[in-house]
Amino acid sequence: MPRGAAWPLVFRWGWSMEQIVILDFGSQYTQVIARRIRECNVFCLIHPWDTRADRLAALGPRGLILSGGPASVYAPEAPRPDPGIFDLGVPILGICYGLQLIAQEMRGKVEPGDKREYGKGTLRIARRGCPLFRGLPGTLQVWNSHGDRLTRLPRGFESVAVTENSDYAAIEHRSRRIYGLQFHPEVVHTPRGAEILANFVHGICGCGRDWTMRRYADQAVEEIRTQVGSERVILGLSGGVDSSVAAALLHRAVGDQLTCIFVNNGLLRAREAELVQEVFGRHFRIRLAYVDASRRFLRRLKGVTDPERKRKIIGRTFVEVFEESASKVGRARYLAQGTLYPDVIESVPIGGNPAAVIKSHHNVGGLPRRMLLRLVEPLKCLFKDEVRRLGMELGLPREIVYRQPFPGPGLAVRILGEVTPARLGMLREADRIVVEEMKSSGWYYRIWQSFAVLLPVRSVGVMGDERTYQFTVVLRVVDSRDGMTADWVRLPSALLERLSNRIINEVKGVNRVCLDLSSKPPATIEWE
Ligand code: XMP
View 1 (cartoon, rainbow, N blue to C red):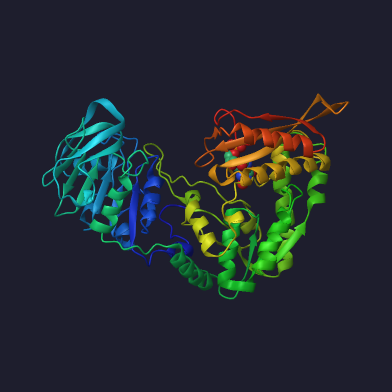
View 2: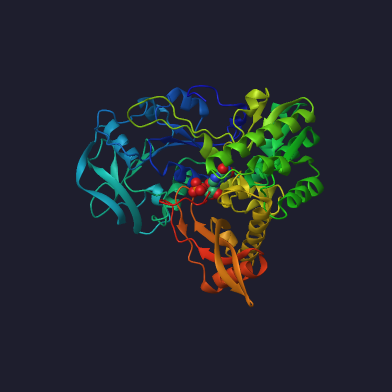
């Protein structure tokens, strides 16, 4: 969506609530600020740093937060906000680069520090009574990450806290309600930082605690009804968290006007098709078109070993099958998708090309346009943890709401080389054992992903008196925040032993189990 265009209707959700606006100056922590604010049960949205003040005013925010960012405020191409934001009359909190912007705008002085202040520091409150630090002790552990620093306070400001390297680690202009923090209150390394942000949104901006998933569900239901009217909606249900929560929400809003299409591509985990039919068909009584296209997928994958070709075949076949079954639903006008907020946050590059960069996100890209469908994206302003809470609120089972990510191309990316029914059978069995053991030991919900990979490599073994020549399974168990980087998990050796024993004993055709000890980067999570 180009910047300046009207948000789609779904984005009106939340606008009837009190909200905080975060202006993004490119910090890697901007989304973390948003999540911390929402954990205070206060709605907030992230907008690009160059959003005009009149547009912000139209949103009626209760407060503004200026994020950190990689630039230096005195660099010629440094991103600077519309000066009109300081006249909106709402409280403003600048974090790191945000503080330096405030200081510069108000004619203080920012200079390059002698050395970059990075890492843990100790903050000492120098002047009691600042509402940002209400209820907090006199010294706090904080996290710094900045090169420049404030060296002269702007007029009307006072320093309220200091660190070893800065006399102005926290500043305030009490009557104008403008605050600045040199450190990052949003990160976990500032243990009491969430309380500082809570003081800002509740104590200074006066926000209540309206943002709850129960309330969101009620509002979303109203919005969906308004948007969709009496038209039919289709939704591609994968059994993953996002499409499942979207399905439950849409169903609550429009009941039988919704048809979910679940495509069995033959690359699913054991009992996956049954679980989806049981939960959505029998429990929720959602109209569910179950399409078993596994033979078509497997026929096309025959003899294919190149990972990219496999992915392309699976993607193309999925669109084909989905279109065929959607055309049978009868005059659907809307396609619902479980797009999440991090997929749509607009970001404006800092320096250089001023055009908006928008991440592509549509799982079934191109489908809506080809099928002349309009999109309904009811999760578009939610973070993943909020989607999970919404899922529980809507009565979805924990098994679905808290499941680990599973790639769209399914087990095909976990079978190296050719995908055959026999190999799928082996991997499905091994995967079932991994899920069972991870769940019964309590590890499944603690980590990002745990799964088995089948290698097309055979090696010699013995079983009883016989020599065997069989395949190898690799265990991949990783932890991650967002899938972009990952580290391998140090599982207890007793659990590893059990996994290995069970896979070798129970999966016919496998005589060896290995453990993957690589992090991402340089490895990826999936093997492909
Ligand atoms: P990699 O292997 O790139 O995976 O480190 C990162 C995360 O993305 C998941 N993944 C996918 N998810 N469709 C998906 O919905 C896909 O095609 C796909 N490929 C990888 C992977 O499981 C991991 O969590």
